[in-house]
Image (cartoon, rainbow, N blue to C red):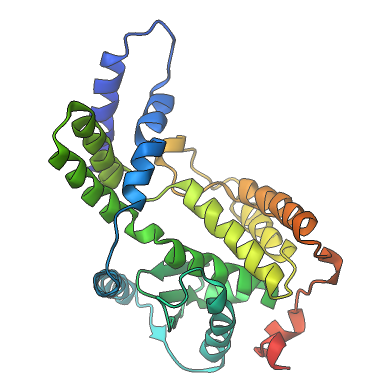
Length: 289
């Protein structure tokens, strides 16, 4: 259904492009599906009450858990791995801009070799045992968890709902510009619920929080590099407007560059930051030693 909507939008946009400049369908859709600054402002002005966010998160989590069960994957909330991850999340949470909105982050371990992690509105995080093993250091694990907490902190999973509500608010105003803006916002809500720039935001938040906690951000960059090496040859080329995540290679480069930039700005010496590999092996947080 989403593919049909995207194709229809492309046909309309290409047909209505009266300029003599050659514009590819991918570029045209990328431009159309990226909110303009004034539309971005309308989205950010939409407030989602805490109770509603928690309800949405619970619904999404329930659907996700059901999907895992169909695959024979169980979620765990006990054991040394769960305790270790929960302790690290507790260390990261105070660095969130809206940590008071999320007094508690609930954590689950999904028992599967798949390398993945998910965040849900309201303060729920699931990390797979495969990702826990793949991180190879406490620093990298903190980076992964911080990335997920950033999605919650910035409300990335609520973007589609905010776009939908912003579109409705625009239509109520009634002017032609407002009607057009509402149409673009509605299309953004349904055709592109996740955007690569949100992943970059979460990666950069993770870098800053890692450095504030004394962890070396190279651990996160190295993680993306290992993922890129593992997936080399398996990547399916996608146009930019269909991608929800940047490529692993792009992410590792941006993490290294942003870490160097933050180190210069804050005066932090990267060579004094820790990878905490032994802590990861012992499943005991560095700050608890």
